[in-house]
Each structure stands twice: as C-alpha cells, then as structure tokens.
Amino acid sequence: MSDIQLGDNLLFLTDEQLRQGIEAMFFAYRGFTAAPDQILEGMAYGRAHHRALHFISRGQGMKVNRLLTILGVTKQSLNRVLRALIADGLVESRIGRTDKRERHLYLTEKGAALEARLSEGQRKWVRDAYRKAGPDAVAGFRLVLESMMDGEMRKSYASLRDGGQ
Amino acid sequence: MSDIQLGDNLLFLTDEQLRQGIEAMFFAYRGFTAAPDQILEGMAYGRAHHRALHFISRGQGMKVNRLLTILGVTKQSLNRVLRALIADGLVESRIGRTDKRERHLYLTEKGAALEARLSEGQRKWVRDAYRKAGPDAVAGFRLVLESMMDGEMRKSYASLRDGGQ
DNA sequence: TTGGAAAGTCAACAAGCCTGACGTATTCTT
DNA sequence: AAGAATACGTCAGGCTTGTTGACTTTCCAA
Image (cartoon, rainbow over all chains, first blue to last red):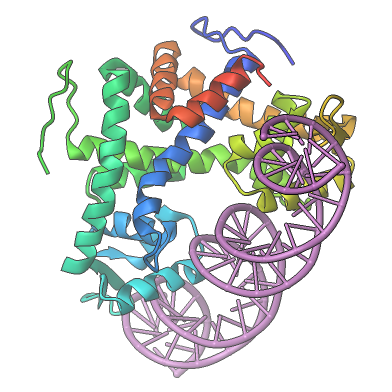
C-alpha cells in the first residue's frame, strides 16, 4: 500500500505507524484486563461477570435489555452470567413496576463490594498510566477512543456518562 | 474513594473520569476487533489465527518461543492455531540452521495475502479514527497506550518496532 | 382477544484459553 | 560420554464465554 498518507491536517500515517497503533492497542488491552482477572481467578467468576457488575453498577436499575445492548452479547450468554450473580446474591433482579415484563438490575451490598474491589484495581491501573503520560496525552487518548466508537457504541457510552436509563 | 486527585501536573482524575476511560477502552476494543472478525467469519479461522498471522508477518523467521511470549498464551493453545495455519499452507515452519531444535515461522504467499487483507481493514479503521481525532490526539493516544504496558509487553512492543528477533 | 414484545430457559455446540503429562530431537554442561 | 536443559510438539481433559435454535411464560396494546 501507500507509504505515506497525508490527511486533512498533514497527519502522517504510514502503514508502519498504524501497525504500531494496532499493536499498542493489543498489548495495552491485555494489561487493562489483567488486574481484575487476577482478582477474579480462584473465584467462580470471570471477565464476563466483571463486565456485568461494572455496568449494573453504573446504571442501577438498568433493564436487562439495555445491559444486553451495552455488552453486545446474546441474552443466552448474559443469562448464564446473570443467573450466577443473582444466585450468589450479588445482583438483584426486580420486576418492573410500570411494565412487569421488565427486570431491573441492582447490585446488592455484596455485589457492590466486589464491584468496588475490581473497579479500584482497574482505576488505579488506569490512573498510573494517565499520570505517566500526562494530561495532554490523556485528552488525546480519550478523543481517539471516542473516534473509534461507532454510532451504537457512542450512544451507550454517552448514556452511561449522562446517567441515562 | 477520593473525588479529586491532583497529580504532579494538576492532572484531574476523578473516579468518574477514570471510569469513562475504562469504558471507552472497552467499547473501542470491540470496534478494533470487529473488522478482522467479520472477514474471518465463515473462514475456519478466528481472532487467534489473525494474531498469529499478524505477528509472524511483523517478524518473518520468528521463533515459536518468541511468538509465544508476544501472544502471552500457552504453547498448547498456540499449537492448535499454528498447526491449522501450517496445514493450510499459510505459514511455513523451517528448522533452524544453527540450532535445529528451533522452528522459524514464515508466511507463505497465501498467508501473506490473508494477512494483508485483514491488516488493511484494520488499518483503515484505525486511520479513520486517527483522522477524526487529529494528530495531537494520536500522539497522546500512543503515549497513554505505551504507558499502559508493563516491562515485558513494552519489550515485545519495542522489539517489533525495531525489527528485533 | 389476539399478536407480538420482553424475558427466561434448555440444549447443543465451538473457539480459545488453560493445566498436566509425556515424547522427541537437539544442544549444552560437566 | 552421560545427563541436564532447551525447544518444540502432542494427547487428554477442563473451563469460560460466546453462538444458534427452539420453546415457554408473561404481559401490553391494538
């Protein structure tokens, strides 16, 4: 392919530059999941449980369907995870008041405690990286990640940020 | 925990900021893998095969052990993937000249063709995001990702960049 | 009242990771 | 020369997380 790509703003994006970005993303994501994975190993939970806890924590009372959309998995896949969390008393599933078909998901105290433990480890890890890189880099980091999201993702992302249900 | 963290350089890192970073990483990584996944679906290969092809392409003649370290998986796990790629004529495994225990991995023409197809899709995707975000943001993005890597990862990352064996 | 949406369940399966144990060829060390 | 170490491959079995397909229950709304 072409060696050099000059964008709108003279952005130099050689294939080599892009490859390095791809590899950086790969390695960084591994580190990103390492901390919570380590806490979870030995417990009967995995990454999927962590993700469910995280997003339920973010939007208490969230409907199952919304969680499904955010996670981007099938309901059958989520169901297995959710069933375990509910059975173990980490998540409570309450029937909707106005629409009784809906199930609203809440973390119990026990669930919130585990979520906090997982979250703290991961935040510390991100914070350390942010500190090393500095505030300007962080702003750029966020901007690129947001540019990477397509319409659906950005909607989920924004709704979490704004506390939307 | 604390609401506001003032770092060395007045970096503001509320828990909310950090959570958003975590979520952005989660969503972005989904998009990151979507393009190659789509190309691969229907073929008999998955993400693991893509990764192997990518890194073999980056370091032609790479030893199995090095690929193992980069990927961070067990040899049994890699072996299944590699066996398929070799059987299908995408990867060639040559016995080492100086040390005959070693196997050196090369992409065949066919392997290079698939790798290129996968890579082009992913590079296009990254390039689009980079364009949207702008060069300053890209520099920050890279800096944060590199800050996220621990020692081992950074070594792998740097060695690929420098063409080290 | 009937069609359809929302949620849940069961079954079967695959990818991709893991551990443990073992085999083989080769090279290094003593 | 003998034994230890290295590099790689393989068999067996298991776990998590994802998939599809088929089906039921509950409930809303036209």
